Image (cartoon, rainbow, N blue to C red; front, side, top):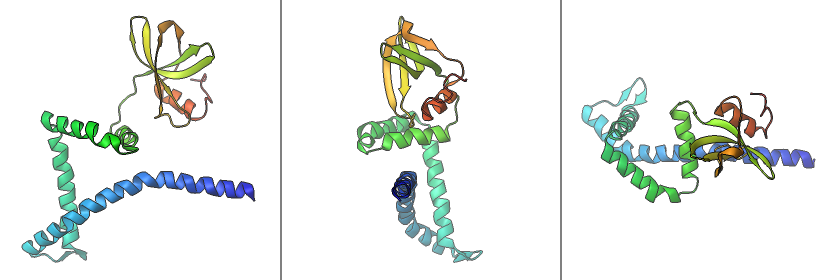
Amino acid sequence: MKKFLDNFRNTILSGILFFLPIFFLSGLIQKVWQGLTGFGAKLAAFVGVKSVAGVGAASIVTTILLILIFYICGLLIRFAFIGKFRNWIENTLLQYIPGYLTYKVKMEEKLIKKADERKPVLVVTPNGSRPGLLIETTGQSATVYLPNTPDTNNGQVWVVDLSSIMHLKGDAKSLLKSVQYSGKGLYDH
């Protein structure tokens, strides 16, 4: 019975962790939707359309307005001063919202598919070795990211002597997957 209750509790907690980003995103879209609904209804009434294929014209116009706003924001971000303003907002205000940076990084990873050029390494210390990703080398020093298990988006950045690094075969993706599974398959790739 205790095992069942522990499993049930862990499943509920996992569901909450899965649901939270969806909840925040849906809340944001709902607020924007509510703000645009009145304007969409007025615009639909101005055009003189009440419904299209059984769907209220206000909903259709509001959806089009929401997509148009996202598109315009995507165009505006291409201008340098808008990008600087967005970065200023992120650096001064949004960094104080708990979890914002984590969700931002995860969202960027999903939306912007790019090859991870970091090289898998082992950082040898007197207490053992830790798997990591080589970020850059400068002289006899190296900057290495050491991911946590199982959440590889969190970790530590170490600056170590270049001689304490052992290069591994494979790529960053396979190393991160191995770290997610507590090191299983670390030497297989």
